[in-house]
Image 1 (cartoon, one colour):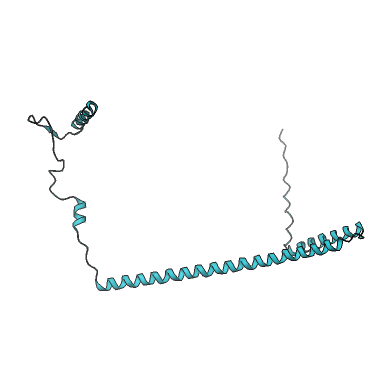
Image 2 (cartoon, helix red, strand yellow):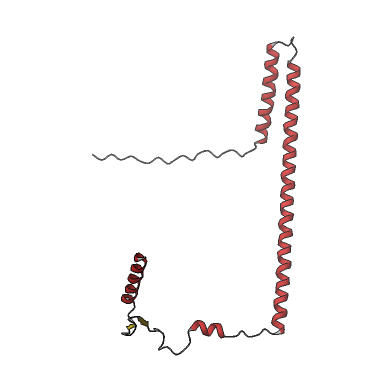
Length: 168
């Protein structure tokens, strides 16, 4: 209990020292605080703003606001629909590409399986197997080279020969 009372005493002393507008009375030996804003007679700015009433809207203003709100809703709906349509179109393109790729992969698998079936005969000599393997690899390389139809790179420009100077 002593600690609490000691704390309270210290807090009171601190408040006494910090507050420059304090007066002590001899009757209570207590502290009486003066209001630092007593001398100000006009109300604060916040009070003025809080007491100010808003001007009521006219009928035309209300109609214009409703019209703007409806226009905003229509535009938002139109934007949403266009985003949805674009997403559907993109999804469809991706699906088409995916199907094409899957078909190409399946064709390759079928061709490889046919080559393996052709090679799987026990009587096939090793030279024929090598020919078939190199033939399939050569065809795919040819297809890749034909598909890559890039323009030839221009020859590198020769740098002009600069004279060399030797200072002794």
